[in-house]
Length: 153
Image (cartoon, rainbow, N blue to C red; front, side, top):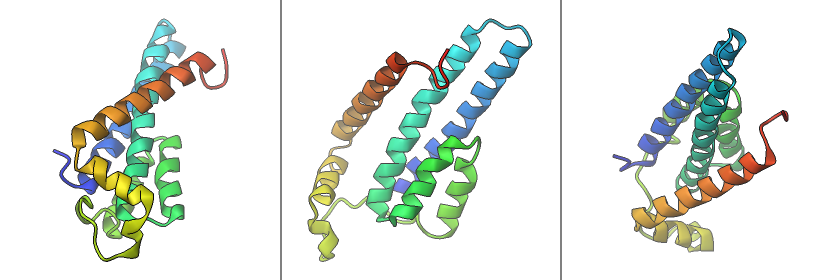
């Protein structure tokens, strides 16, 4: 399903936009008299996908060798409702999502960097990468839940 970085990025960009809809709908529902738990659930779903999108953006940025500024724009787009969609379109149109996963070392000197070697090791073992990402995202999610909701109670 995620045979290319572009495909994975697109799926998470769309999921992030969908969860914005869930969160905004929950906030409106609470304002109209629904119990506050709707925002808790909607916010939880959105928060988890937000973190997954951020992790995906970092992984794809490393694989595609984006300039730091491009990576920051991609990651920061998750903060603005629905901004991940136009950013994904821009990245696609500018060729930044074109290509496959970099599974093998090439003659490019950048392939000798430690984090490129580590990334290739994980990319050749997608289940290990998936487990690592899920554990990291869940751990960060739990830490953020313990810290409390954005803006406090």
